[in-house]
Amino acid sequence: MSTRQVEYVDFTATEETREYRLRVRQGADIHHVTVAIPNEAFLSGRVRYQDAPDICFLKIQQELAAGEEGALPAPALEMTDQELEEYRISHAPKTPRRRS
Image 1 (cartoon, rainbow, N blue to C red):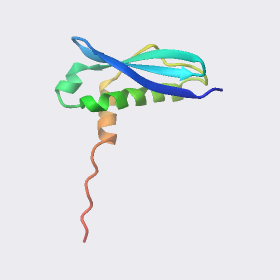
Image 2: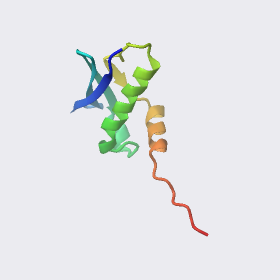
Image 3: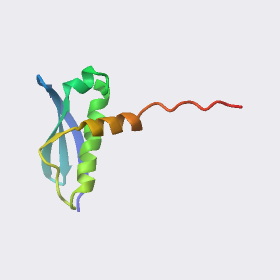
Image 4: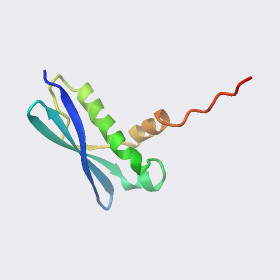
């Protein structure tokens, strides 16, 4: 099987979401995927704007890993509140340990 590459393309802001467009390359084939993140997640501080491309990249990587070999993700995906919370927790700064 050929290697898959995921590349960030751009984003579009709508009234309800920010839609991030990424490109999945598999050999000579190109597949576009749009991942939507609700604006409310940004406005409430649950998601930082600079983290959004990484969040979307990880979402597509998970979709690729969960699918059958060679399967591509759906062309439109939405981030759930649970997925955003999991990302926030896994990327929270570590508390420094106190030295005795």
